[in-house]
Image (cartoon, rainbow, N blue to C red; front, side, top):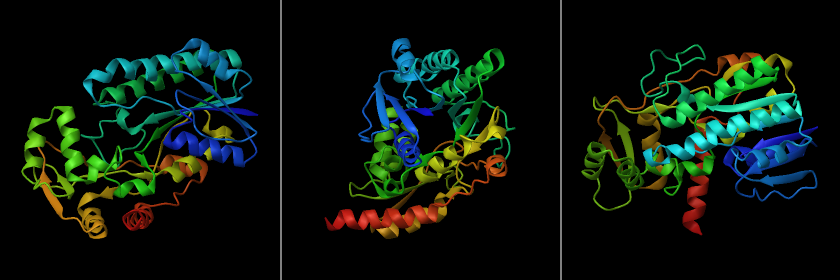
Length: 327
């Protein structure tokens, strides 16, 4: 069996490729960037997902596909790139997969296909309405529909997994992290909101900034701390591996991620204590982020149980923080 992993240079894709290699599978990576993986059973096809020639070359001899690669951005100026990579790129891969008669196409969708910022009910299950509020979420929902069309029209065996927000544990206390920097640290959050053009948020955040490094606890306009799902990369990889050989997952759409949400009101004081940095509490305009996604369907179908809850991730993050400060 040869398994294609798109996004093989990414956080989840590289870990998945390495895990498949450890199982003795032959793996091919497909990404714009090299993964850095060196293994006798590993090869890479460089290229963009919406490049028909590159997609065809990547699919030669492949029996299963994990389509994890995507372009992620929430900036208005990046919408052309979003749709090219995530919609047209998925269509190109599906065309090649149909031609290659692959036995399984696993598509990494996103919780952003739901209205995560304004859920109609909690927890958010797979039956919740799909009403994305970001262009990124829209591209993933369009990708889902393309995958289902390939299943209906061409008999392509597929599984759709709606990914929770995912991070490596060590990133949680890294101000330079793409995700945790603006989520938990004041000055990176100011820079992020400036890039988004959110003037009211920038004003509220700047009022709490005295120029010194600080953590930030984001709350909504009524003072409710944010709450969301954060999943360890290793748990996402473990879940993906469970899908490959389970026929009962063919045609399924499932949420994949942590079991419990992360409440900022609880975890931010603990994170500030680890760093020794002051914690600034900022009430931001609007309803804020407050949701919980259910992984119950996936757990029932596969026996999946996350091994790295947020508390365990934070312990590892604290170790990484202290090691960095001592180096």
